[in-house]
Image 1 (tube, rainbow, N blue to C red):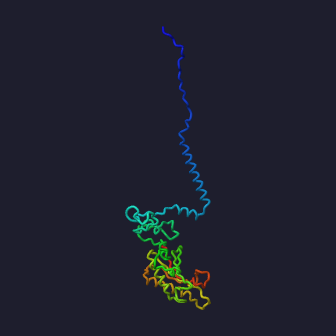
Image 2 (tube, rainbow, N blue to C red; image 1 turned 135 degrees about the vertical axis):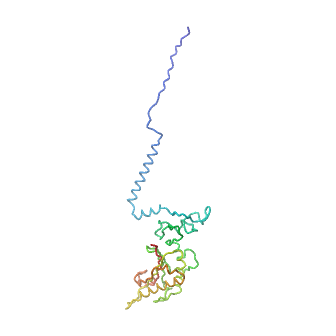
Image 3 (cartoon, one colour; image 1 turned 60 degrees about the vertical axis):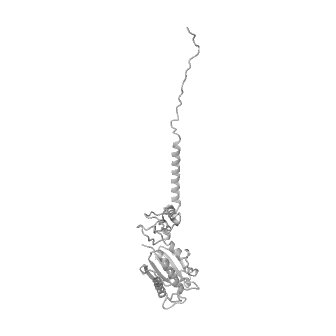
Amino acid sequence: MGAQSNAAPIIIKKKRVSGGDGHHGGAWKVAYADFVTAMMAFFMLMWLLNATTEKQRKGLADYFSPTIPVNPVSGGGDGAFGGNNMFSEVTMVMDGSGATKRHPTIARQARGSIGVNPDGGKEMSEDFSTLEAQLLGHTGESMVSDKVLKHIVTRVTDEGLVVELFDTEDQLLFESGTDEPTPMMRALALLVTRSSDLVTNAVSVEGHVSASPVVLAQDPSWDVSTSRAQVVRQLLEDKGFAGSRLDRVTGHGDRELADENPMAVRNNRIEIIFLRDT
């Protein structure tokens, strides 16, 4: 009979730890953070809508609107960077379409621009920026002298691009009190005619004169302003401006003043308006 062992049997117990069933690696934290971010953005949006004016909101919307219109034909040349510049906004197109300063979108409507031609054509008749630059001598054209530039101002209105040609103290555009154009007026008519090829808009010619220093029995301002407008119309056509683009020729007498002094020489002016397309 063998010897018996006095050692107690060894019992191994495996303890299972339960709990923590609700923990799934922290994914809920990411979802919660997204929710909080979205709520913060929502409240900021509501605050901005309440704190800004309609004009400010329009400006914000224009800022974030696309600046490159979609066109089936792109500008520039072949290959990588085939144009003059890698940025489309400063690249002059080769085929008259694409996204450039000459073909902006509705976000630049304030400068008279309406975007690309929906038919994919080449005519962009309401982008006045290049025409303004040409008339004001910003393109370095040799035909625009400093003497000529002293007689030109431009502005864009709801009606279109207004080009004012006006008298100065030392240089008149017409002989005093008559409709006889001076050499300066003829030079200005040539400049406008050459620059007008940049757009296809119809044109209005309007004459304005200063008030007479004395009260006359028969006011000559109406006849003089009208005849001067007609003379400018004829000068434009003689220089090569298409007569079919002329929409109207009118005289305003001394009723619409550019200077608050009715007798100021600055009020003697011709307004050539490149009308917006309707």
